[in-house]
Length: 304
Image 1: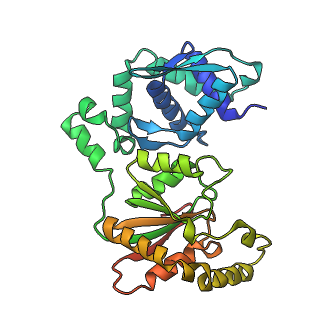
Image 2: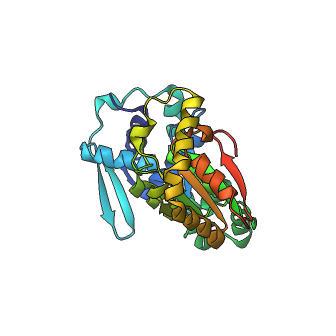
Image 3: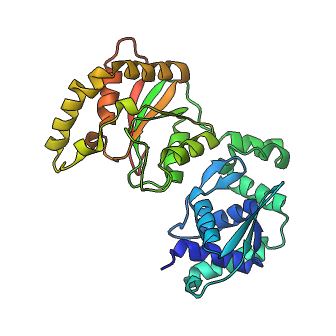
């Protein structure tokens, strides 16, 4: 059974003569989602503008399956449709109409003009672009810069990736001007796409956020078994404070130095609810240190 989002990708390629540059593909896919009631993909402001990590992963998966080919060229990648499987049919009438609209509106538009139009209409997604200064006027650039979030106040955040796509997660960090992400998982691996160490590090650094892994402040996975009530979590975290956190105090102080050097950092682990994650106890210990000048905010799903 093919994921519906992959059907969208194949149909988009098919309607555009089976050949799109990676930059053009990402912009068209982004514009398609702007017209969807429930967006099939999320996007971040990346070095060429709006970018979906999930879509890129889907492209490589389907290339491995023989449905398309990704050709690396000096000016960027080219995506070529090789076969249109029968299982790729069955788009909703709305999504099919959206692709028709994209073809009519942008089919003959040069790539740079397409990129420019997305930057003008959706300036937030151009804040990390290396192309914007060559494509936009000073007035248009000023609207892009106005979307950037900068805060002088030092801050300590916590964030869990449970229930978030990689793109939504990264955007939460950006709008709060997080400059360093401190991963406090014992093992920085996840079955959820985007949150294994290598991918998460690449995504952060691609938008200008430094990634640091501090496994010494993590909890062994076997200790997290059979946690059913908040009281179970509380007992585990009390043991954690008395053992792991106490014996690794030097690493906690290293995190404080990261705050002093960078101003705004976020502690991350899996759980959406900070009460059910040991990062809350790491944050508690950091807030109890003397001479701190930062405040604590838990970034929760759906808000912040």
